[in-house]
Amino acid sequence: MHYPNDSIRRTKIGWFLLIGLTVIFMFLYLKSALIPGPIDPAITKYFSFAMADKARIYNSTPRILFIVKFVLQIFLLFWLIFSSRGQRFFQRIQRTCRNYTLTSVISILSIWLLSKVLALPFSYYTGYYWQKVWGFSTQTPGGWWIDYLKNTGIDLLTFLIGGLLFFWLVNRFQRYWWLVGAILFSLWLVIAHYFLPVIISPLFNDFEPLTDPAIVNMVDDLAQRAGLNIDSVFVMDASRQTTLANAYFSGVGTTKRIVIYDTLLDNYSLPEIKAVIAHEIGHWRNNDIVHGLLYGIIGTFIFFALLRILLKPWLSNNRNKPPQLWAALQLALILLLFVSTPLQNGISREMELRADRFSLELTGDLSGEIQLQKNLASRSLSDLSPPRFIVWFSYSHPPALSRINSLEKVYIETQDSAHSAK
Image (cartoon, rainbow, N blue to C red):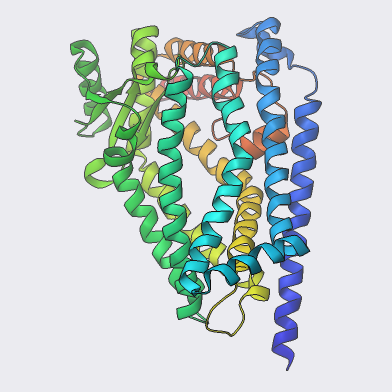
């Protein structure tokens, strides 16, 4: 007799803590976005105050819109789950469809469509209009819509398959659905990381093997010094979408590769390109994709265990679970992902700093490394003095000044070690 009461109490405590932490983070994020505080005078060693002011203006609007969109998403899900109209919405679906599978499909698609319609103005404004205003987007409106529809199609397919699989799990495995779900989702993470570079990414851009002899020789030299055999370096035609420069490391197993934006090759000096490639080789050498996957799998099991507690009110003993369960799942997930964002980004920032250190050790070129960070920050209008909370909460990479200071510290330590060895 005590177990049901204990279960209900755990569920109430879980939702109370989750919502409470979400509200605190939302308030602190919005406060930091609206009142970012004074610009750190230390930035003047590498940047101007005018540049810092300009970057603040560019970054403030997307930050505010991020929170506004998040709040609206939460209200939508709360309305669907708890309001009388939301209840009638699901009852109407059940009466119209009658068949349980069809009811599940329509419920999943309805929630997906409502969420997409709500998010579309924000996606268009921050993803296209704001980038166009500031001179970063090279796309036409039609080009942006084509990419958006491709993304939407992929999202719809995964959302529908995931939703049907979820209903099958909770109906088939009454007690252990969360464990089976965590195992299946972990497998999906591995499969997605494997196929992302060879199936999904080519839907949006063309990827060609690196052919520039000078840079190919540079890659071979860096790889040899790093003790790696790297023959998968690709150039992406990012210029079809943006003026911004970047590079990244992706894939697992036979699909591992380093991808360089063509905007980086066209607009940056050879020492800067060398620093970028050395940084990505650092990710390769440190097995950061594999480590990220392991963290993701651990997080998956924790999330599913928490979902087992949070979704208890909608997990009746009946064979067919109510369609409202899918809306409750979306609410729980969006809140869990939100409050866990600082942990995820903290891990990412540490990986980036390790790759920076490896890059400097590999190139030995402090001036090239610093010039790269200066140009990347200036040309992308990165916030040069971001509020501490926003860095802690949402930055997957350290701010430019932090990266430069870290590089200088590593360089000094390396020089001191070299002198001590003599």
